[in-house]
Image (cartoon, rainbow over all chains, first blue to last red; front, side, top):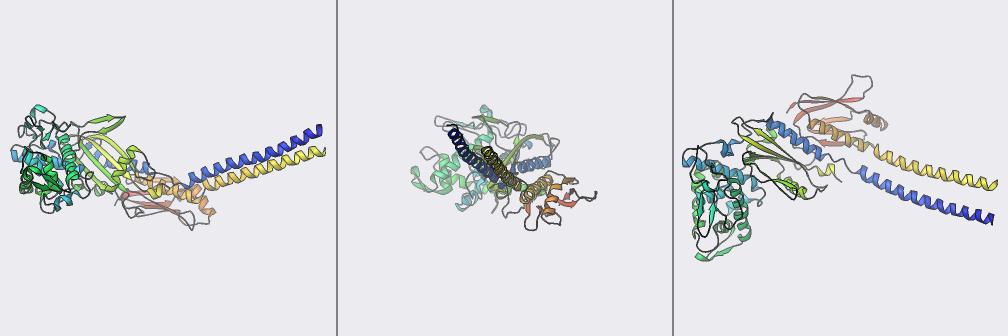
Length: 379
Length: 130
Protein backbone atom coordinates (compact mmCIF):
# COMPACT_ATOMS: atom_id res chain seq x y z
CA UNK A 1 0.00 0.00 0.00
CA UNK A 2 2.80 2.29 0.93
CA UNK A 3 4.49 1.73 -2.47
CA UNK A 4 1.21 2.29 -4.33
CA UNK A 5 0.66 5.54 -2.44
CA UNK A 6 4.14 6.70 -3.38
CA UNK A 7 3.56 5.84 -7.09
CA UNK A 8 0.25 7.65 -7.26
CA UNK A 9 1.81 10.70 -5.57
CA UNK A 10 4.61 10.65 -8.12
CA UNK A 11 2.05 10.38 -10.94
CA UNK A 12 0.11 13.27 -9.49
CA UNK A 13 3.32 15.34 -9.36
CA UNK A 14 3.93 14.66 -13.07
CA UNK A 15 0.42 15.74 -13.94
CA UNK A 16 0.91 18.83 -11.78
CA UNK A 17 4.11 19.63 -13.71
CA UNK A 18 2.25 19.47 -17.01
CA UNK A 19 -0.40 21.81 -15.64
CA UNK A 20 2.30 24.03 -14.20
CA UNK A 21 3.87 24.40 -17.64
CA UNK A 22 0.48 24.89 -19.24
CA UNK A 23 -0.23 27.73 -16.79
CA UNK A 24 3.26 29.15 -17.41
CA UNK A 25 2.68 29.00 -21.14
CA UNK A 26 -0.63 30.86 -20.85
CA UNK A 27 0.92 33.55 -18.65
CA UNK A 28 3.92 33.86 -20.94
CA UNK A 29 1.65 34.19 -24.00
CA UNK A 30 -0.23 36.97 -22.25
CA UNK A 31 2.97 38.79 -21.31
CA UNK A 32 4.39 38.40 -24.82
CA UNK A 33 1.16 39.66 -26.38
CA UNK A 34 1.00 42.66 -24.07
CA UNK A 35 4.66 43.55 -24.57
CA UNK A 36 4.32 43.14 -28.32
CA UNK A 37 1.22 45.32 -28.54
CA UNK A 38 2.66 47.97 -26.23
CA UNK A 39 6.10 48.24 -27.77
CA UNK A 40 5.07 48.04 -31.41
CA UNK A 41 2.64 50.94 -30.94
CA UNK A 42 4.29 54.30 -31.51
CA UNK A 43 4.63 56.79 -28.69
CA UNK A 44 1.67 59.13 -29.02
CA UNK A 45 3.02 62.63 -28.45
CA UNK A 46 0.22 64.48 -30.24
CA UNK A 47 -1.36 65.78 -27.03
CA UNK A 48 1.97 67.21 -25.91
CA UNK A 49 2.54 68.63 -29.38
CA UNK A 50 -0.90 70.24 -29.60
CA UNK A 51 -0.35 71.64 -26.11
CA UNK A 52 3.02 73.12 -27.15
CA UNK A 53 1.44 74.58 -30.29
CA UNK A 54 -1.33 76.21 -28.25
CA UNK A 55 1.21 77.64 -25.81
CA UNK A 56 3.32 79.01 -28.64
CA UNK A 57 0.33 80.76 -30.20
CA UNK A 58 -0.68 82.15 -26.80
CA UNK A 59 2.76 83.61 -26.14
CA UNK A 60 2.81 84.91 -29.71
CA UNK A 61 -0.40 86.93 -29.47
CA UNK A 62 -0.24 87.97 -25.84
CA UNK A 63 2.61 89.34 -23.76
CA UNK A 64 1.71 89.61 -20.06
CA UNK A 65 -1.98 89.71 -20.93
CA UNK A 66 -1.53 92.52 -23.44
CA UNK A 67 -2.61 91.85 -26.97
CA UNK A 68 -1.08 93.87 -29.74
CA UNK A 69 -3.73 96.03 -31.42
CA UNK A 70 -3.03 94.20 -34.67
CA UNK A 71 -4.27 91.00 -33.00
CA UNK A 72 -7.34 92.68 -31.57
CA UNK A 73 -8.68 92.54 -35.12
CA UNK A 74 -10.43 95.86 -34.64
CA UNK A 75 -11.33 95.84 -38.29
CA UNK A 76 -14.11 93.38 -37.68
CA UNK A 77 -14.92 94.39 -34.14
CA UNK A 78 -17.64 96.97 -33.85
CA UNK A 79 -17.07 97.34 -30.11
CA UNK A 80 -13.86 99.21 -30.70
CA UNK A 81 -15.24 101.62 -33.28
CA UNK A 82 -17.74 104.43 -33.11
CA UNK A 83 -20.04 106.06 -35.63
CA UNK A 84 -22.03 109.23 -35.91
CA UNK A 85 -24.01 108.99 -39.16
CA UNK A 86 -26.42 106.17 -40.07
CA UNK A 87 -24.17 105.21 -42.98
CA UNK A 88 -21.13 104.85 -40.70
CA UNK A 89 -23.17 102.80 -38.25
CA UNK A 90 -24.43 100.55 -41.06
CA UNK A 91 -20.80 99.95 -42.01
CA UNK A 92 -19.77 98.97 -38.48
CA UNK A 93 -22.83 96.75 -38.01
CA UNK A 94 -22.20 95.10 -41.37
CA UNK A 95 -18.55 94.40 -40.54
CA UNK A 96 -19.63 92.75 -37.30
CA UNK A 97 -22.08 90.57 -39.22
CA UNK A 98 -19.35 89.60 -41.67
CA UNK A 99 -17.08 88.64 -38.78
CA UNK A 100 -19.72 86.39 -37.19
CA UNK A 101 -20.77 84.77 -40.46
CA UNK A 102 -17.18 84.23 -41.53
CA UNK A 103 -16.42 82.50 -38.23
CA UNK A 104 -19.23 79.99 -38.66
CA UNK A 105 -19.17 79.62 -42.45
CA UNK A 106 -16.82 76.64 -42.44
CA UNK A 107 -19.28 74.58 -40.40
CA UNK A 108 -22.32 75.19 -42.58
CA UNK A 109 -22.18 73.92 -46.18
CA UNK A 110 -19.05 72.98 -48.17
CA UNK A 111 -18.20 75.50 -50.94
CA UNK A 112 -20.95 77.79 -49.71
CA UNK A 113 -19.47 80.88 -51.41
CA UNK A 114 -19.36 79.18 -54.81
CA UNK A 115 -22.95 77.98 -54.43
CA UNK A 116 -24.15 81.49 -53.56
CA UNK A 117 -22.26 83.01 -56.48
CA UNK A 118 -23.46 80.32 -58.90
CA UNK A 119 -27.06 81.18 -58.05
CA UNK A 120 -26.32 84.85 -58.75
CA UNK A 121 -27.87 86.06 -55.51
CA UNK A 122 -24.73 87.63 -54.04
CA UNK A 123 -20.97 87.76 -54.45
CA UNK A 124 -20.42 85.41 -51.52
CA UNK A 125 -22.26 84.09 -48.46
CA UNK A 126 -21.38 86.97 -46.13
CA UNK A 127 -22.71 89.45 -48.69
CA UNK A 128 -25.96 87.49 -48.99
CA UNK A 129 -26.43 87.78 -45.22
CA UNK A 130 -25.66 91.50 -45.45
CA UNK A 131 -28.29 91.87 -48.20
CA UNK A 132 -30.86 90.13 -46.01
CA UNK A 133 -29.91 92.26 -42.98
CA UNK A 134 -30.22 95.36 -45.15
CA UNK A 135 -33.69 94.28 -46.32
CA UNK A 136 -34.82 93.32 -42.84
CA UNK A 137 -33.51 96.17 -40.71
CA UNK A 138 -31.42 98.52 -42.86
CA UNK A 139 -28.48 97.07 -40.94
CA UNK A 140 -29.77 98.47 -37.65
CA UNK A 141 -29.87 96.36 -34.50
CA UNK A 142 -31.21 99.02 -32.14
CA UNK A 143 -34.12 101.44 -32.28
CA UNK A 144 -31.73 104.37 -32.70
CA UNK A 145 -28.88 104.15 -35.19
CA UNK A 146 -26.37 104.79 -32.36
CA UNK A 147 -25.90 106.05 -28.83
CA UNK A 148 -22.56 107.53 -27.80
CA UNK A 149 -21.27 106.37 -31.16
CA UNK A 150 -22.13 102.72 -30.50
CA UNK A 151 -24.57 101.23 -33.05
CA UNK A 152 -25.08 98.15 -30.88
CA UNK A 153 -25.68 100.03 -27.65
CA UNK A 154 -28.90 98.09 -27.03
CA UNK A 155 -27.33 94.63 -27.17
CA UNK A 156 -29.39 92.32 -24.98
CA UNK A 157 -31.83 95.05 -23.90
CA UNK A 158 -35.15 93.95 -25.35
CA UNK A 159 -36.88 97.36 -24.96
CA UNK A 160 -34.19 99.17 -26.99
CA UNK A 161 -33.81 96.61 -29.78
CA UNK A 162 -35.13 97.29 -33.27
CA UNK A 163 -38.40 95.33 -33.22
CA UNK A 164 -41.47 94.65 -35.29
CA UNK A 165 -44.31 93.72 -32.98
CA UNK A 166 -47.73 92.60 -34.20
CA UNK A 167 -50.13 89.69 -33.91
CA UNK A 168 -48.15 87.60 -36.41
CA UNK A 169 -44.64 88.24 -35.27
CA UNK A 170 -42.22 89.71 -32.80
CA UNK A 171 -39.16 90.16 -34.93
CA UNK A 172 -36.03 91.40 -33.23
CA UNK A 173 -32.65 92.79 -34.09
CA UNK A 174 -30.58 93.30 -37.16
CA UNK A 175 -31.78 90.06 -38.75
CA UNK A 176 -35.38 90.52 -37.53
CA UNK A 177 -35.72 86.97 -36.23
CA UNK A 178 -39.33 86.22 -35.34
CA UNK A 179 -39.18 85.20 -31.69
CA UNK A 180 -42.79 84.01 -31.79
CA UNK A 181 -41.63 81.19 -34.05
CA UNK A 182 -37.97 80.78 -33.10
CA UNK A 183 -36.72 80.16 -29.58
CA UNK A 184 -33.76 82.52 -29.57
CA UNK A 185 -32.69 85.59 -27.64
CA UNK A 186 -32.46 87.69 -30.77
CA UNK A 187 -32.07 90.86 -28.70
CA UNK A 188 -28.43 89.79 -28.45
CA UNK A 189 -26.70 90.77 -31.67
CA UNK A 190 -24.37 87.74 -31.90
CA UNK A 191 -27.05 85.21 -31.03
CA UNK A 192 -29.58 86.69 -33.42
CA UNK A 193 -27.19 86.74 -36.38
CA UNK A 194 -25.84 83.25 -35.73
CA UNK A 195 -29.33 81.81 -35.31
CA UNK A 196 -30.72 83.56 -38.40
CA UNK A 197 -27.87 82.26 -40.54
CA UNK A 198 -27.74 78.69 -39.29
CA UNK A 199 -31.27 77.89 -38.22
CA UNK A 200 -33.22 79.88 -40.75
CA UNK A 201 -31.28 80.71 -43.92
CA UNK A 202 -29.07 77.62 -44.21
CA UNK A 203 -31.86 75.37 -42.93
CA UNK A 204 -34.21 76.72 -45.60
CA UNK A 205 -31.53 76.14 -48.23
CA UNK A 206 -31.00 72.53 -47.19
CA UNK A 207 -34.72 71.84 -47.10
CA UNK A 208 -35.79 73.60 -50.29
CA UNK A 209 -32.79 73.86 -52.60
CA UNK A 210 -34.35 71.38 -55.02
CA UNK A 211 -37.26 73.77 -55.57
CA UNK A 212 -40.47 74.78 -53.82
CA UNK A 213 -43.63 76.49 -55.00
CA UNK A 214 -44.41 79.85 -53.42
CA UNK A 215 -48.15 79.67 -53.89
CA UNK A 216 -49.14 83.35 -53.31
CA UNK A 217 -47.44 84.30 -56.59
CA UNK A 218 -47.24 80.80 -58.13
CA UNK A 219 -43.47 80.93 -58.43
CA UNK A 220 -41.06 78.09 -57.87
CA UNK A 221 -37.87 79.07 -56.07
CA UNK A 222 -34.81 76.84 -55.87
CA UNK A 223 -31.25 77.03 -54.53
CA UNK A 224 -30.41 80.15 -52.56
CA UNK A 225 -33.49 81.95 -53.88
CA UNK A 226 -35.56 79.31 -52.07
CA UNK A 227 -33.50 79.94 -48.94
CA UNK A 228 -34.18 83.68 -49.18
CA UNK A 229 -37.87 83.06 -49.78
CA UNK A 230 -37.95 80.70 -46.80
CA UNK A 231 -36.31 83.35 -44.63
CA UNK A 232 -39.42 85.51 -45.08
CA UNK A 233 -41.76 82.50 -44.96
CA UNK A 234 -43.68 80.43 -47.49
CA UNK A 235 -47.17 81.44 -46.40
CA UNK A 236 -49.29 84.33 -47.49
CA UNK A 237 -49.27 87.67 -45.71
CA UNK A 238 -45.53 88.24 -45.98
CA UNK A 239 -43.57 90.20 -48.54
CA UNK A 240 -44.31 88.49 -51.85
CA UNK A 241 -41.41 90.29 -53.54
CA UNK A 242 -38.96 89.49 -50.73
CA UNK A 243 -36.52 87.56 -52.96
CA UNK A 244 -36.40 90.40 -55.46
CA UNK A 245 -35.96 92.93 -52.65
CA UNK A 246 -32.96 91.04 -51.27
CA UNK A 247 -31.42 90.69 -54.73
CA UNK A 248 -32.04 94.39 -55.26
CA UNK A 249 -29.73 95.18 -52.33
CA UNK A 250 -26.77 93.55 -54.08
CA UNK A 251 -25.42 96.77 -55.60
CA UNK A 252 -25.82 98.76 -52.39
CA UNK A 253 -23.95 96.12 -50.39
CA UNK A 254 -21.21 95.91 -53.03
CA UNK A 255 -20.74 99.67 -52.87
CA UNK A 256 -20.89 99.86 -49.07
CA UNK A 257 -18.64 96.86 -48.44
CA UNK A 258 -16.26 96.71 -51.41
CA UNK A 259 -13.62 95.01 -49.21
CA UNK A 260 -15.93 92.02 -48.79
CA UNK A 261 -18.38 92.13 -51.69
CA UNK A 262 -16.65 93.45 -54.79
CA UNK A 263 -16.52 91.27 -57.90
CA UNK A 264 -14.82 87.92 -57.29
CA UNK A 265 -14.16 88.60 -53.62
CA UNK A 266 -14.17 85.75 -51.10
CA UNK A 267 -14.27 86.90 -47.51
CA UNK A 268 -11.65 85.29 -45.36
CA UNK A 269 -11.40 87.39 -42.23
CA UNK A 270 -9.42 84.70 -40.44
CA UNK A 271 -6.84 84.61 -43.17
CA UNK A 272 -6.23 88.35 -42.93
CA UNK A 273 -3.57 87.48 -40.39
CA UNK A 274 -0.90 85.11 -41.55
CA UNK A 275 -0.40 83.02 -38.44
CA UNK A 276 2.49 81.08 -39.95
CA UNK A 277 4.48 84.25 -40.43
CA UNK A 278 3.32 86.14 -37.35
CA UNK A 279 4.00 83.28 -34.94
CA UNK A 280 6.91 81.66 -36.79
CA UNK A 281 5.23 78.37 -37.53
CA UNK A 282 6.25 75.84 -40.13
CA UNK A 283 3.51 73.36 -40.92
CA UNK A 284 5.59 71.26 -43.30
CA UNK A 285 6.06 67.69 -42.16
CA UNK A 286 6.96 64.22 -43.41
CA UNK A 287 3.46 63.93 -44.89
CA UNK A 288 2.27 65.73 -48.00
CA UNK A 289 -0.86 67.12 -46.36
CA UNK A 290 -0.65 69.73 -43.66
CA UNK A 291 -0.88 67.98 -40.30
CA UNK A 292 -1.73 71.01 -38.16
CA UNK A 293 -4.62 73.40 -37.67
CA UNK A 294 -4.76 76.44 -35.42
CA UNK A 295 -7.73 78.69 -34.73
CA UNK A 296 -7.89 81.75 -32.52
CA UNK A 297 -11.32 83.08 -31.54
CA UNK A 298 -11.58 86.50 -29.98
CA UNK A 299 -14.68 87.04 -27.82
CA UNK A 300 -15.83 90.34 -26.43
CA UNK A 301 -15.41 89.84 -22.68
CA UNK A 302 -18.53 91.93 -21.98
CA UNK A 303 -20.77 89.42 -23.73
CA UNK A 304 -18.64 86.31 -23.17
CA UNK A 305 -20.71 83.49 -21.74
CA UNK A 306 -20.04 79.84 -21.00
CA UNK A 307 -23.04 77.54 -20.66
CA UNK A 308 -23.00 74.11 -19.09
CA UNK A 309 -25.17 71.19 -20.05
CA UNK A 310 -24.67 67.55 -19.04
CA UNK A 311 -21.44 68.51 -17.32
CA UNK A 312 -20.01 69.85 -20.56
CA UNK A 313 -19.00 73.49 -20.81
CA UNK A 314 -19.50 75.31 -24.09
CA UNK A 315 -19.02 78.90 -25.12
CA UNK A 316 -22.44 80.30 -25.97
CA UNK A 317 -21.33 83.68 -27.34
CA UNK A 318 -20.14 84.28 -30.88
CA UNK A 319 -16.57 85.37 -31.55
CA UNK A 320 -16.03 88.95 -32.70
CA UNK A 321 -13.10 87.80 -34.79
CA UNK A 322 -11.51 84.55 -35.83
CA UNK A 323 -8.06 83.83 -37.18
CA UNK A 324 -6.91 80.44 -38.36
CA UNK A 325 -4.25 78.64 -40.31
CA UNK A 326 -3.36 75.13 -41.37
CA UNK A 327 -5.51 72.26 -42.57
CA UNK A 328 -9.10 73.32 -41.89
CA UNK A 329 -10.35 69.75 -42.49
CA UNK A 330 -8.86 68.68 -39.16
CA UNK A 331 -11.23 70.96 -37.25
CA UNK A 332 -14.09 68.48 -37.52
CA UNK A 333 -12.07 65.91 -35.54
CA UNK A 334 -12.30 68.16 -32.49
CA UNK A 335 -16.08 67.92 -32.52
CA UNK A 336 -15.85 64.12 -32.68
CA UNK A 337 -13.26 64.12 -29.88
CA UNK A 338 -15.77 65.86 -27.63
CA UNK A 339 -17.97 62.77 -27.86
CA UNK A 340 -15.31 60.04 -27.98
CA UNK A 341 -11.54 60.06 -28.28
CA UNK A 342 -10.47 57.89 -31.21
CA UNK A 343 -6.80 56.94 -31.57
CA UNK A 344 -6.80 57.43 -35.32
CA UNK A 345 -8.16 60.94 -35.16
CA UNK A 346 -6.38 64.23 -34.77
CA UNK A 347 -5.74 65.45 -31.25
CA UNK A 348 -7.21 68.78 -30.24
CA UNK A 349 -6.14 71.10 -27.50
CA UNK A 350 -8.09 74.11 -26.29
CA UNK A 351 -6.89 77.00 -24.19
CA UNK A 352 -8.89 80.02 -23.04
CA UNK A 353 -7.31 83.10 -21.55
CA UNK A 354 -8.03 86.78 -21.25
CA UNK A 355 -6.31 89.74 -22.81
CA UNK A 356 -6.62 93.46 -23.21
CA UNK A 357 -5.59 95.53 -26.19
CA UNK A 358 -4.08 99.00 -26.40
CA UNK A 359 -7.56 100.53 -26.60
CA UNK A 360 -8.55 98.75 -23.36
CA UNK A 361 -10.91 96.38 -25.17
CA UNK A 362 -11.10 93.20 -23.14
CA UNK A 363 -11.19 89.86 -24.87
CA UNK A 364 -11.58 86.23 -24.01
CA UNK A 365 -9.32 84.37 -26.39
CA UNK A 366 -9.81 80.74 -27.27
CA UNK A 367 -6.98 78.90 -29.00
CA UNK A 368 -7.72 75.58 -30.65
CA UNK A 369 -4.66 73.67 -31.81
CA UNK A 370 -4.99 70.41 -33.69
CA UNK A 371 -2.29 67.90 -34.57
CA UNK A 372 -2.94 64.96 -36.88
CA UNK A 373 0.27 62.99 -37.56
CA UNK A 374 -1.73 59.79 -37.10
CA UNK A 375 0.72 57.61 -39.02
CA UNK A 376 3.56 58.59 -36.70
CA UNK A 377 1.64 58.34 -33.45
CA UNK A 378 -0.95 55.65 -33.72
CA UNK A 379 -1.04 52.09 -34.96
CA UNK B 1 17.70 5.96 -1.88
CA UNK B 2 17.28 5.37 -5.62
CA UNK B 3 13.73 6.71 -5.53
CA UNK B 4 14.87 9.82 -3.64
CA UNK B 5 17.54 10.37 -6.30
CA UNK B 6 14.89 10.24 -9.04
CA UNK B 7 12.83 12.87 -7.26
CA UNK B 8 15.84 15.20 -6.97
CA UNK B 9 16.72 14.82 -10.68
CA UNK B 10 13.15 15.49 -11.72
CA UNK B 11 13.03 18.56 -9.53
CA UNK B 12 16.29 19.86 -10.96
CA UNK B 13 15.03 19.32 -14.53
CA UNK B 14 11.80 21.03 -13.57
CA UNK B 15 13.62 24.04 -12.09
CA UNK B 16 16.01 24.28 -15.06
CA UNK B 17 13.13 24.16 -17.53
CA UNK B 18 11.28 26.84 -15.58
CA UNK B 19 14.41 29.00 -15.52
CA UNK B 20 14.92 28.55 -19.28
CA UNK B 21 11.31 29.45 -19.83
CA UNK B 22 11.52 32.65 -17.80
CA UNK B 23 14.91 33.53 -19.32
CA UNK B 24 13.42 33.39 -22.81
CA UNK B 25 10.51 35.52 -21.66
CA UNK B 26 12.76 38.12 -20.05
CA UNK B 27 15.07 38.13 -23.08
CA UNK B 28 12.08 38.78 -25.32
CA UNK B 29 10.88 41.65 -23.12
CA UNK B 30 14.35 43.24 -22.97
CA UNK B 31 14.87 42.82 -26.71
CA UNK B 32 11.59 44.64 -27.28
CA UNK B 33 12.07 47.42 -24.75
CA UNK B 34 15.67 48.18 -25.66
CA UNK B 35 15.34 47.94 -29.44
CA UNK B 36 17.11 50.44 -31.66
CA UNK B 37 13.92 51.36 -33.50
CA UNK B 38 12.17 52.18 -30.25
CA UNK B 39 15.09 54.29 -29.10
CA UNK B 40 15.20 56.13 -32.42
CA UNK B 41 11.52 56.99 -32.23
CA UNK B 42 11.72 58.09 -28.61
CA UNK B 43 14.74 60.31 -29.17
CA UNK B 44 13.45 61.88 -32.40
CA UNK B 45 10.12 62.79 -30.81
CA UNK B 46 11.83 64.05 -27.68
CA UNK B 47 14.12 66.36 -29.66
CA UNK B 48 11.25 67.60 -31.87
CA UNK B 49 9.11 68.43 -28.82
CA UNK B 50 12.04 70.18 -27.14
CA UNK B 51 12.56 72.36 -30.21
CA UNK B 52 8.81 73.09 -30.42
CA UNK B 53 8.82 74.39 -26.86
CA UNK B 54 12.04 76.40 -27.18
CA UNK B 55 12.63 80.05 -27.89
CA UNK B 56 15.45 81.25 -30.14
CA UNK B 57 18.77 81.28 -28.31
CA UNK B 58 18.05 78.14 -26.32
CA UNK B 59 20.82 75.57 -25.97
CA UNK B 60 19.84 72.14 -24.69
CA UNK B 61 22.14 69.30 -23.70
CA UNK B 62 20.52 65.93 -24.02
CA UNK B 63 22.01 62.75 -22.59
CA UNK B 64 22.26 60.11 -25.30
CA UNK B 65 24.56 57.56 -23.65
CA UNK B 66 22.12 54.71 -24.16
CA UNK B 67 21.53 55.64 -27.78
CA UNK B 68 25.26 55.90 -28.47
CA UNK B 69 25.82 52.51 -26.83
CA UNK B 70 23.12 51.04 -29.01
CA UNK B 71 24.65 52.65 -32.13
CA UNK B 72 28.04 51.24 -31.17
CA UNK B 73 26.48 47.82 -30.75
CA UNK B 74 24.97 48.17 -34.22
CA UNK B 75 28.38 49.26 -35.62
CA UNK B 76 27.01 52.66 -36.57
CA UNK B 77 29.70 55.34 -36.26
CA UNK B 78 28.07 58.41 -37.82
CA UNK B 79 26.16 61.24 -36.14
CA UNK B 80 23.03 59.85 -34.52
CA UNK B 81 20.90 63.04 -34.53
CA UNK B 82 20.53 65.28 -37.56
CA UNK B 83 18.16 68.16 -38.27
CA UNK B 84 17.22 69.08 -41.82
CA UNK B 85 14.76 71.93 -42.38
CA UNK B 86 12.16 71.19 -39.70
CA UNK B 87 12.66 67.45 -39.48
CA UNK B 88 14.66 65.66 -36.79
CA UNK B 89 16.17 62.33 -37.81
CA UNK B 90 17.65 59.87 -35.34
CA UNK B 91 19.67 57.00 -36.77
CA UNK B 92 21.26 54.30 -34.61
CA UNK B 93 21.90 51.71 -37.32
CA UNK B 94 22.81 51.60 -40.97
CA UNK B 95 19.44 50.30 -42.09
CA UNK B 96 16.99 52.25 -40.04
CA UNK B 97 16.27 55.69 -38.64
CA UNK B 98 13.25 57.65 -37.54
CA UNK B 99 12.17 61.16 -38.54
CA UNK B 100 9.74 63.54 -36.84
CA UNK B 101 8.87 67.11 -37.73
CA UNK B 102 8.61 70.17 -35.50
CA UNK B 103 6.44 73.22 -36.15
CA UNK B 104 8.66 75.90 -34.57
CA UNK B 105 10.10 77.77 -37.56
CA UNK B 106 13.63 78.14 -36.22
CA UNK B 107 17.12 77.29 -37.39
CA UNK B 108 18.07 74.32 -35.21
CA UNK B 109 21.13 72.12 -35.14
CA UNK B 110 22.26 69.03 -33.23
CA UNK B 111 25.91 68.24 -32.58
CA UNK B 112 27.82 65.89 -30.28
CA UNK B 113 29.00 67.58 -27.11
CA UNK B 114 32.77 67.29 -27.29
CA UNK B 115 33.48 69.07 -24.00
CA UNK B 116 34.30 65.73 -22.37
CA UNK B 117 36.60 63.01 -23.67
CA UNK B 118 33.85 60.50 -24.05
CA UNK B 119 30.76 61.78 -25.85
CA UNK B 120 27.74 61.38 -23.62
CA UNK B 121 25.55 64.30 -24.68
CA UNK B 122 24.28 65.98 -27.79
CA UNK B 123 23.78 69.74 -27.90
CA UNK B 124 20.62 71.03 -29.54
CA UNK B 125 21.01 74.68 -30.48
CA UNK B 126 17.86 76.63 -31.31
CA UNK B 127 18.94 79.68 -33.30
CA UNK B 128 16.80 82.54 -34.58
CA UNK B 129 13.53 82.37 -36.47
CA UNK B 130 13.72 81.73 -40.19
